[in-house]
Length: 78
Image 1: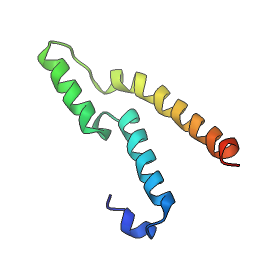
Image 2: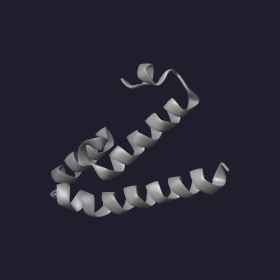
Image 3: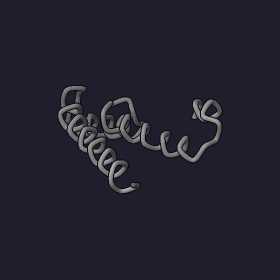
């Protein structure tokens, strides 16, 4: 949100912000408050989810999302 004033209010700015937030949430444990809540609830249930466990799932999801985005931008909008 702090970057929006510097992107001059273009439509692409909103799309970029949404994509960056989504990828950050997929890739990083601290990229989304929902991730932190889920890890805390899991910990309370006796399940430990650390950085490595999260990145094992988050990295392929983020990479797959980027691949789909690239394909959509290359062929879907063309």
